[in-house]
Length: 177
Ligand SMILES: [Zn+2]
Ligand SMILES: [Zn+2]
Image 1 (cartoon, rainbow, N blue to C red):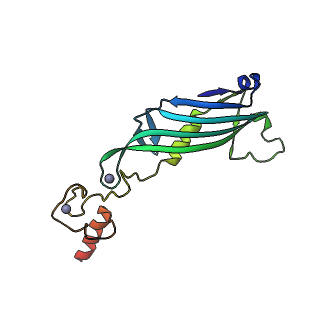
Image 2: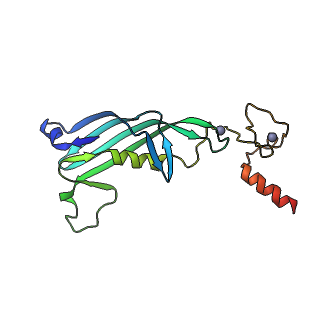
Image 3: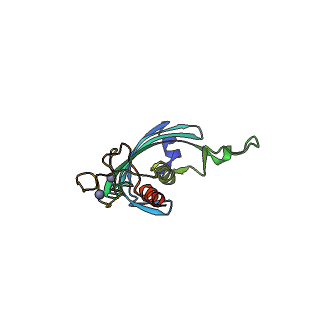
């Protein structure tokens, strides 16, 4: 979504409500590709004060994910918010100061929000996605999913804390010595 600042100003306004859908399909997440099941929903407001823009957005999207505990695919409902300040590049370095990292400089009179939204999403997707909070993962003994299925191992069920299957394997190896 490109925002034309001049047209906001020409309309004699200094705020603009935003409500649009961004069709991304995929997100490049540190080398992994995450598939989106819905368009990215963007809602928010832009405030224009002279050559400065303040942007508040909320972002939601449904993504296809694999649970990091039980490895089953599930739909992850992503939510985040963006607060950003855009400043016209003619105002940068006016006092010979280092450019402020929190400020995004724009040229001419348009601001593109897509990159900002994509970056925000990548930063806010957790490294470990879990299908639901209490997911018990896989049995360290037989590798079966623990929930909704009862293997005969009864190893993990009796433990209070969830043990990562890989750690369990390591523990097993250490105990053999
Ligand atoms: Zn799970
Ligand atoms: Zn088992």
